[in-house]
Length: 477
Ligand code: 5AD
Ligand code: SF4
Image 1 (spheres, rainbow, N blue to C red):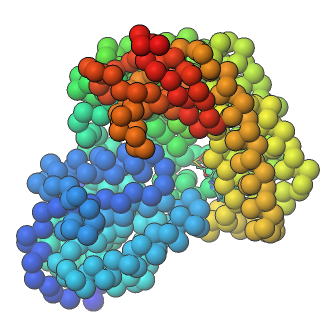
Image 2 (cartoon, rainbow, N blue to C red):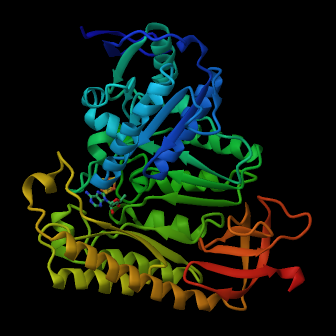
């Protein structure tokens, strides 16, 4: 019989649903874990921090999922396809459980929040389901499952403990730093506000402390993360009565991170065009460490669709921001997110998206086919009436445009010298190294003696493709 009781994990006071499972032996020996991550950079960051927390509790990272004692799926609900992939993968672990009955298997993150206990019903071999606000309780939950052979669900909201999840894998050239959680925008297609809750921003001093620690360990690039990062600090300012539409707490945070010694580069994702006010634009243009490559979701170039999406900006306003940045910055790159086949999108509206993408001159874009998500306004109120074949066709057209545009835009780098932050060996060829330009172009060049990841080097570009720039280190050119 199911029962509910208080969690005994350190610092946690919420109630957990407790579902007994059949007894197996061997749980006391659990030592290694593996986290498989799906979805966005926020999930990658959560997995890294949870991994550190598990290590603090004495577990070690397993080389692969087949040998892990604890197998965790950190999941994404943004599109149906992402969910189906996880359902398939979790289903396959039934065999692993049969071979090694002592293994503990859990689902965490957005799908855990969205589906809760229904996941335990769907998968009889699943041990725990932990939602987006409860990740800090995973070590306690795993220990309890090992002791009691129970099944657990923890999906209460409002109890997240971001500061307990601030660990980083040491030695990385580039590190993600989460500055806020949740989203208040409620774009009509998006499940994020539902599964990640309302916006909660960390205190600037906590973010800066984490950045200082990373810089002290040799990290050169800080990648700030928030689902709606340009709204950083705004919910709190409204609550305190200090909100001003002309201020930008995120711009203030960028200035503080820019001041941290040892940090060479700052990137962030994702800004919302609605919050890109003058204070924000001034900060990104003025601050030398802020990379001049901006990922700004457009979603559609047609105003009727943008309104149905509840985006709060027109295509014209969006393009005005891009123009402003291009005018102020000699070298800048833009990328975006686009949804094709949003309900009722006509050929003419799709053409407007194509036109807007061309006008913005995006280097790169993530193009998504609209996928209705249960519980969202669009799924409830609008018909998913654009046929799959039309979504696919529109997707292919935009991808072809992108490749053509990137190929020709990258040729402007030929013969130029770009400053590259060295990341490490190229995956395709170990005699070459890979890194990125300030404008986020992948640069590949022969390795030279004494060079190491984290170095900033000048590379003379000799050849370009749609995806990469190739060259050699300046002194050798
Ligand atoms: N269908 C398709 N794409 C979506 N996105 C979010 N929700 C959906 C959906 N229901 C895309 C948006 C967002 C990105 C992270 O995922 O483009 O910016
Ligand atoms: Fe989703 Fe819109 Fe929030 Fe982005 S801003 S996370 S698309 S609701």
